[in-house]
Image 1 (tube, helix red, strand yellow):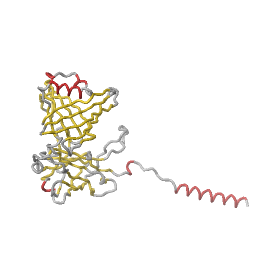
Image 2 (cartoon, helix red, strand yellow):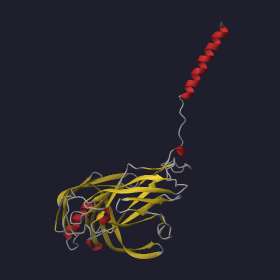
Image 3 (cartoon, one colour):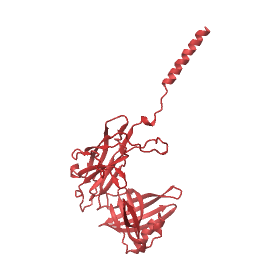
Length: 341
């Protein structure tokens, strides 16, 4: 009886072990996950008279096999693939072919050279009627760019357009459709045509107006010590640019510097640039609210946020900004800044 009891116990034990092993899940390693091709940005926009725009296709970060990059890095493909994409959901114009004239594809080899310069063909195909296209994403490359030539006369009028003019681009598939390369077909790139009769575009400050110069220094000296110490005789010009999703406040100094670029040396004016994201902007109106948010890197590597809030009013190219500023426990009371196109 003891032997039978022992055998019965062992059968139950082995059965339990077998069931336990069935429930085990082998951990997935990095190589089990596919390489993912995706759009590098969610959107962009240019003024009505711009004759081109572009979008980029990149690879998603993966775990660095060497362990040097803790945040992950792009691991290039080992074989060429063909990426299919589609331009759709366009608004403000009747047909894609009335706006998109041509297209080309390239990638950056270094700061001064692209694949186009070397005569490398990425086999871009684009149908302006259907909006469908395809392009080669080469092995060994981290990112490619597709640039569209646009009809710069289609929207370039002298009328403020409150309705949107835009299009969307999505990646649809990749071929050969292997296990280890896929596309993210859920994210999209949205391109908007910005109206320069509205808030968007470049404005200049009247350098003969000492009060307006002082107002600019008061506002943007809040976040930049170099601006805070400027005198009017130091400055060549001051510009404010409302761009897609951001504002740039630029001071061009009379001081110059030599800039080396692609083997050539140019003499350029020194610039002080402050950038902030447009968190709020009534861009479908000629007057409304505006909020600008940005970050300033500190000496210890951290970042502190600044905020400008207020309103704008645009009349015949003359822009009046009323802004309050806040940064690092310092505040600027409402200040009026007047600039013109």
